[in-house]
Image (cartoon, rainbow, N blue to C red; front, side, top):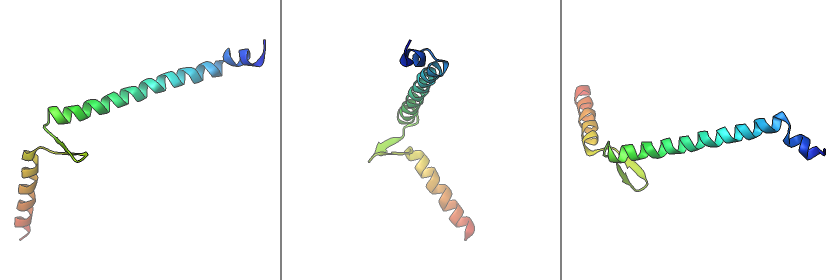
Length: 76
């Protein structure tokens, strides 16, 4: 039995392989979650994707403008 057979049959090699396997699964699930979150914002929450960035729905933008105007009026 040479050194490569001992290395492949060792417990540390199996642990490295299992860790790599579960790490790849975790990264794939993270990527799927990110894609799902993006599609949820686009199709369900009506975000706009312009010039490489997400913009909130028009109603949310108007509400933010109104709340900022109310804050300005309260300060005066």
